[in-house]
Image 1 (cartoon, rainbow, N blue to C red):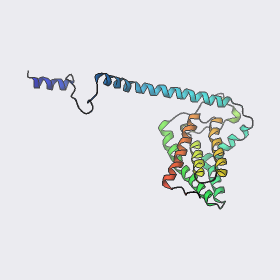
Image 2: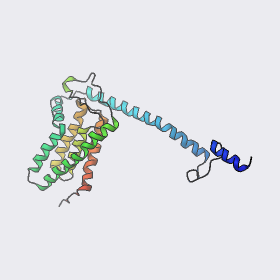
Image 3: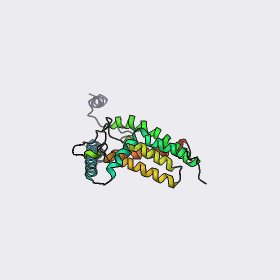
Image 4: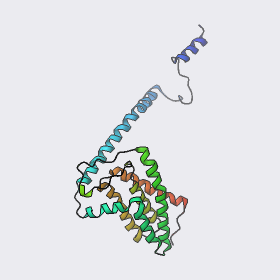
Length: 227
C-alpha cells in the first residue's frame, strides 16, 4: 500500500495527523487540552453560578419578607398597584406636561417614550426568554401580599417601566422634579419585592434595562442643552 493511499485511509478514519491550519496555528498540545477542558467545564460553571445567584436571591427575598417596616404596609402595596400598566407614570407625565414649562414637558415625553420602548421588550421578550417562576409565598405576610401575576418573574416589568420613566425625566427636568420622581420609582421597585411578587434580582435586572432604554432615547431624540 502506497504512502498516499495509507494517508487517505487515516484521514477518513480520523486517525491520521491533524492538518495544520489557521485554527491550529500556534496552538500547543497543552494549550489545546486546557481549552478543551475549559469548554467542557463551561456548562457546569454556568449551572453553579446560576444556582448561587438563585440562592442569594431567595435569601434576600426572605429577609425582606421578614422585615418589619412600620407604616409601609399601607403605602407600598397601593403604590405598586398604581404602577400597574404604567398608570402612575402616565399620571405624573400628565401633571408635568400641564405645568407649561418646556423642560418638564420634554421630561414627561422622554419618560413615556422610554416606557414604551422597554415595556414590550421586558414583558413580551425578556420574560419569555428566561421563564423564571415567581417566588414562593409560603410564609409570606398576608397583609403585604399582592396579587401574584400569571406572567414569569424575570425581569420585573414594573421596575423596568419605573426606572425608564424616572431616568427619562431626569434627562430633561431639574433636580427638584427629577429627585421626587426617582424616589417614587425606587419605591415602586422595592414594593415588588415587599409585596412578594418578585425576587430582588428581577427588580435589579428590570431597573437596569429601564435605565438603558431611557439612555437610548438620547440617541433617538437628542437632549436639548440646558442654558
